Every structure is written in C-alpha cells, then in structure tokens.
Image 1 (tube, rainbow, N blue to C red):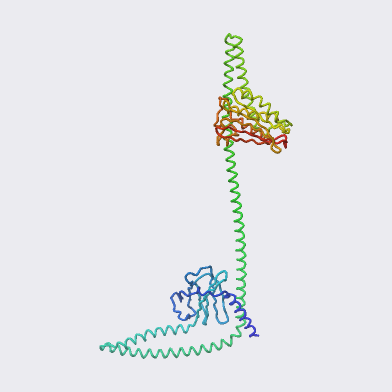
Image 2 (tube, rainbow, N blue to C red):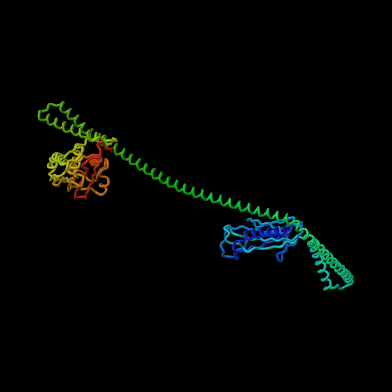
Length: 515
C-alpha cells in the first residue's frame, strides 16, 4: 500500500514539473544569480552550494540574462524549492527570494523563467542549500584556526633575530603545538558528529514511511493550490478578453460619435450658409423696396407739380390736355410699380395658387409678340417669330405664362441696340413645350450668367436707351416657371447676344405647387 502511494505521489509530482517546464528551452535566455546574502553579508556560493545555519536569513537576488539582439517579451519567474519528497512551486514576477528558519537538512532550489504566451523557457539556475548548525560552527573554528596557522607559518619563515625575539619564537613554537592539538581535536569532534549524523539518517529512513502519508497529503495540497492558480489564471484571461471586447465596443461607439459629430458640423455649416443667404436676401429686399419707393416718389411728386400747374394758371385747352396726358402717363408708371410690388409679395408667399387650363402656347406667344412689336419698331429693331403649329395644347396658367414671355421679349428689346434683330421661336421636345427668344444685343458675361436668375441681380449690361429696370424680371420668370414644373436657362456671349429659353410639361401633375 505504501509503495503504491509513493508511485502516485511521484506521478503527481512529475506531472506538475512537466506542465511547468513544457515550453521549449531558449538558450539565448539564461537565469543567473546576482548575489547571495546571508544575514545581510555577501556569501560565497562556489559550486552553487550554500552552507548556513537554522537561524540564518538567506536572500537570493537573480535576473534573466538575454543575449544581445534577442527580442524581449513579457515573462515570469518560476521557483521550485524541494526538500526530499516535499516540494513547492511558485510563479512570480520578482527578482528576489528570501528564506528564513530553515530546519537542518539539504534543500534544492531551481529558478527558471518563461514567457506569458508559453512559447519559450529560459535555461534555469540550480542551488543546493546545506542547513547544518554544526558545520557552520566548525567552519567558523576552521576559519579562526586558518588565521592562527597562517600567523605561525609566517613566524617560522621569518625567525626572530635577538633574544627577545627568540623568546617570542619559543612562545610561538608552543602556540604551534597547541594549534596542532586543537586541529586534531576538531577533527575528532567532526568525525564524531558525522557518525552521529549517520545514525540520525538511518533513524530518519526508519521514520520516513510513517511520515510519507503526511508528505503526500501536503503535496496534494500543493497540487490543489496549483489547480486553484490555474483557475485564477483562466478567470483573469476571461476578464481580459471581456475588457478587450468592451474596448472594441467603445472604439466602435467612438467612431460612430465621430461620424455623428461630423454630420452635426456639416448641418451647422449648412445652417450658417442658409442664414447668410437669408440675410443677403433680406438686404436685397430692403434695397429693392427702397428703389421702388424712390421710383414711386418721383412720379408722385411730378403728378403733384402738374396738378398745381393745372390749377394755378390760365392754360389753353391744348396745354391742359398735355398736362393731363403727362399725369395719366405718370399714373400708369405708379400703377406698374405697385403691380411689381404686389407680384414680389405674391411670389414670396409660401404657396402660389395657379389657374391651370388647356391652352395654345402659340396663341399666348402671338399676343405678347404683337404687344411688344410697336416698342421694337420704335427702336428700329427687326423682330419676327417662328412658331411650331404642331404643338399640342398645354396645361398652363395663361396669365402667368404671358407674364414670363413678356419679361423675356421686353428684356431682349431693352438690351438690343438700334438696328438689331430679335427672333421668337416655339418647338416641342418629347412631352415638353419649349420657348426661345434670341437677340444679337449686348450679351452677358460669365459672372452675369451665374447670377442671372437671382432676385435683385444687377447685370453688367445696361439698357441701350436708358430704359428702367428693377433686376426682378428674370427672378420672377424663374419663380413662375418653377410653379409650372418647368425649367429656364440662358446661353450668351458678350457682344454677340443672348438666347433665353424655357420648357414646360404638356400636363401638370397637380394644380397647387409649393414654391
């Protein structure tokens, strides 16, 4: 039964040792002893052997020596401290180990190192502890005798030269005899102690069987501690994996927040841009109404002057008629300006009500053409039209389209010099009806083309005969065509003329259109 328990213990012990040192040995990494201190004093440990007493404190400082050029990785030290069948294995990250109150016996210490990923194990260092109070005392006596013998040998080699020294030499010879006697006595004592130790060892072998079960139980405890350490390591690894998962989740969330922050920044930039545009539009509106009020003020003052003239002097019928005609023409201008303001306010409302009906676009173009023909003739302009008679009826608000075409044709007349040519054209493109008015007038610059349809835009070209302009005509055209789900564009070259075009669908998807 005792033999079987002994083999079980050996199996457990060597299984543990095999697990701890299963990593391949890396000869480029060696564990070395820096120094050994016994009671704070540096001790000699030749042949990796230490002799100390039970009351001594033994401190061992060690380190991992790595060859130059070898990559350094995280590692731990592992110590195996064994006394007969008892052993203790510890894993730690410190470079100092202290032993105190060791009992008289022989001990074995092995220090190794391994990396955390268990890919390598360093070359270990081994020490033998000889804890023996009697040997320590004998070594102390031996050291003292060595000192005395050395002194006597020095006297023998250098004998005294006078009487006093001769007498001293005799005394020295006596000391030598005494020393030799003491050495023989020490040898006798040492032999006696060795015999006593041999008897104790035989007795300990007799008692070892009785203590075996206790030692086995203690080693089972060590094995349990090792298993507990393994479980703790597994738990720590699981916690590390969990923390890494949390870090990855936090990185993903950080990336999401960064993207959201960029989106918010872009939205803020857009809002700031819209705010600036609204402020600019408000400023343009204020300037526009200031111009219109000024334009209304002048003819109103003129009417007042004409009325005063009419009522203050005796005028002939012809003179009165001329004044009345001037008042009527000035009143027409004021009404036109008032209508312009009304159109602006209407176009700035959130919704515009259009009265759609099936109409012949060519008929609307002809009406506007004939109204403007007299102005073109008075300016000595050659104006003609080319209408596509196959156009189908379109679903439009004829009054609004009339206003669009009138703006475009009247602008062509304003910006074309005397003797120029203006052409008006209609055609069909798929399900859209297209209108074009071309002239060989002043034309527009590249900068003018960028702002042509903006409200209140003042273009570089000026009317050729000083005709009045508010900078609203093309803006009104675009607003009305947007309400018809149409498009407007311009092609122009400075000094060669311009072509303004728009297209509208044949059928409208809805009656009320958001502006």
